[in-house]
Image (cartoon, rainbow, N blue to C red; front, side, top):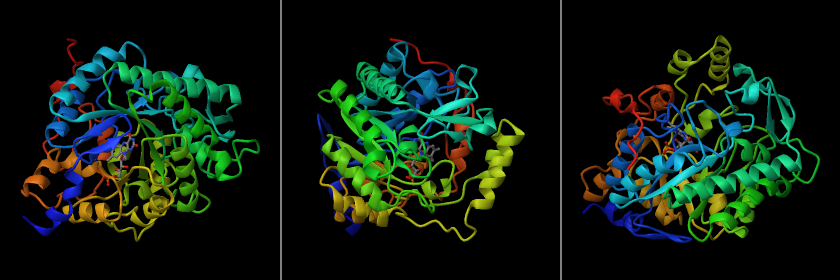
Length: 413
Ligand SMILES: Cc1cc2nc3c(=O)[nH]c(=O)nc-3n(C[C@H](O)[C@H](O)[C@H](O)COP(=O)(O)O)c2cc1C
């Protein structure tokens, strides 16, 4: 057995997350599969997660389900409604048969939407103004949510978590990162409020913490309640790791069972999120409008020219959060090798979450365990990101792609 396999050994041991025990500490990070073309799971989605479970992960995350129709980012995304439950149950049963746990990432888009909900030209968000992303899709403005809006949305998160439990999920992950609604409150890049929900990081965390509280109250006995948090926005004027450490402490006090640490924002700093440039040529080819293509050209211009991919690119920022809390933390961002896993275990992270390396090889964990592979061959090209728009769904651009026949809905049992 190689040294790195020995020192990565703790990652192959079980982990307790509130009411849930994972068989090991590897989690498939939420990565929009693009496999719900009609807002319902397809056979491809079930196969994708069953393969990940069979390939050895402790838990796989389905991404992402909006908590309500007006929280959708994309038309081809799941919006949680009771009709979804039997379809999602097929998926969770398939994952459980392979011995893994299933987590559902639940989100609200806020201003990060491509849709004119109810025909409206404005979306809800932390603050009002021009909607820099939405305007490429006809949603020109955003309006500051009132307390009644926040109460409604917190209730929608709780209701979505209840439906996830009915559908057989073992965990939910509340998306508080990457520029979605709860992150629009957390980040000073989008929160310019002057009331109790803006200003200090404690105030900016107030609404996300309330959402967590309501989800915990709704399902905390039966489901692990996890949160995905951006440790750093990675651009001037955005959240820094020290801010995220404060937020993490508040979420710990509120009883979160796991924080998955990520970073970056979909609009202002996607290259921070991925640690490498976006596949702008493929994104332009998939863009629905000339304005959307213009937005992608702007992204090309703002991406640092000297950006070079670095394994474990969120390690320094994540360490700041690690030092601030005692609760379980999952590291995410550029995990490629067993040496990376060993290092993260030694540094006190409790789980390892991976997206691209598992899109490249869903059996990576089993291959690491057996010693067949020591390093992922994923080159972080981000070609898979543009494939969320592919009718067959996400796949590695270096592989054969998905079977287009599997875009059919699952057969209900
Ligand atoms: C194709 C693709 C889709 C993604 N979609 C989501 C998503 O829906 N929700 C989310 O929280 N993160 C999403 N991410 C980000 C990943 O969860 C993860 O934070 C990021 O890829 C860095 O991890 P990695 O280096 O292991 O890929 C996506 C990543 C990829 C590659």
